[in-house]
Length: 495
Image (cartoon, rainbow, N blue to C red; front, side, top):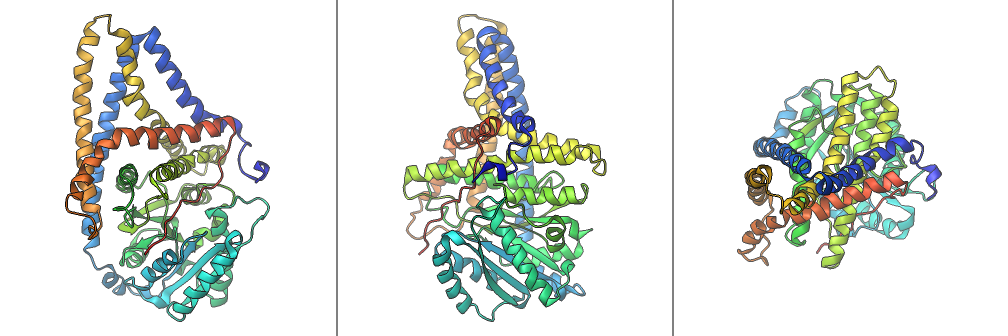
């Protein structure tokens, strides 16, 4: 697609900032290691101390999130909803964009909605295919519409045309087309916009049976509910026993990051599968159709449209998704790298924020600074922390090894203690991951539980190869103007 129709290249200075920051850090770290090694050692100690404190901070939030998650799953949210006067007015629109997915994946997604603990007659399902997959999609949609005919309030399918000017082929443009089409249905049915909650799922998503009840309860009871998006815990567990160890470690890392963010919802954005209000979608003109990171951008659209009066409400219930998977080991590693790079392409939000925030005094200055700083800091540490801790952090010691100093003699012990503290985070993550695993398949022997623990020894490798490298890749591409398109995560066929 012609980049002139995309939102890239118009604010080159802002696009270059993240890449300049990370490459300046790497260059200075290498230069200081050779020409000012003692200063480099001091910097490494300070940085590792900062990272150790962050690990402890992160771990505390993850543990609290886990216990909140367990508590939330035990409550019958549908019984609570039914006790709220007027709760029957709430409708749920569920958007399921798809591209070349296997029929079994689509059917599982629809079946999980049917089997949820909520009234089926309050669901409007929208299955959205792409013109590039028209023949396959029409056949799959026909079978689903026949099987689930009369189950929901309505169940429609749409086909997103190819080649619409100003669009990037991908989930965001498909979602916008689906939203425009379902608006016609909503207006025809004369459903009030404030009575509609919208859930945008990746099509492999299986929501917890109480998801829609919990979502309805929050919407009916929280303050200013139309000015919020609603974020579940994302568990990549549908196929977690089948994928390779580096993929398992990476996806659990993503889940733990999200859980920690849910405890600090004042700073979080929406991620992957989530819910929002129909009124907000209408107010912002639906999803933007010309970018990669539509899941987090839609939150920013609401935040800017309502002048900072927009937030994320944590659901603390899970949705179950597929971990990325390839046809073989190395194909799986390649697919994981591409997925992580696509997530790291969230760096595209920085120019958008800076331009939208500039001169907008309706958004409090402290909020603008907070969101910009959090975004830059998150992208920066994503790319640099693994490299500074596990690679560049050792370089000045090689240079100084023939120059005995008190600093050189004592700093390894200091770093060792800090790494021991950080290792506690690894052990905690390993044990928490066991409690989040689905039931062990019959073909997996009991000793596989040991594998699920030992695989966390790969964390330093995955931290670099599937953490830092994709983030460096994405930010460097943005810096030099080599923009990414949307990459569809591979989904394997189900039995």
